[in-house]
Length: 96
Image (tube, rainbow, N blue to C red; front, side):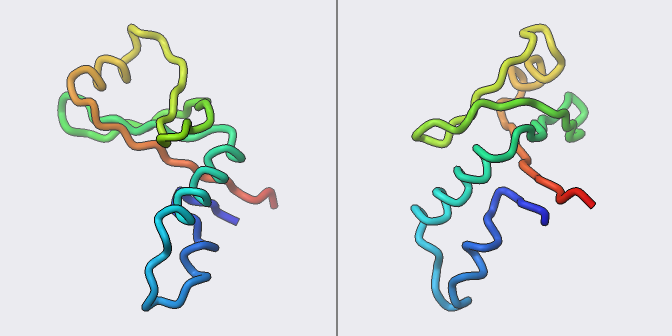
């Protein structure tokens, strides 16, 4: 099973004509973010290329803010100082 940030079980449980309540979607996302140990932090370098690296995040806080530790001299910190946009990608693969 692949678990992406948008919880497929929540999205497919509602008929297509009905919007999923924001609180329900956030609760499902929070549950997945807590249960998945690692995620990819994706930043943009000075040439506009997306760079992904694995991080070990803390669980999201009440505002869905996610913290993770890193070296302040790392490339990702330099990239975030230049361009503060970041994407966190959570995925879990079933062992076969």
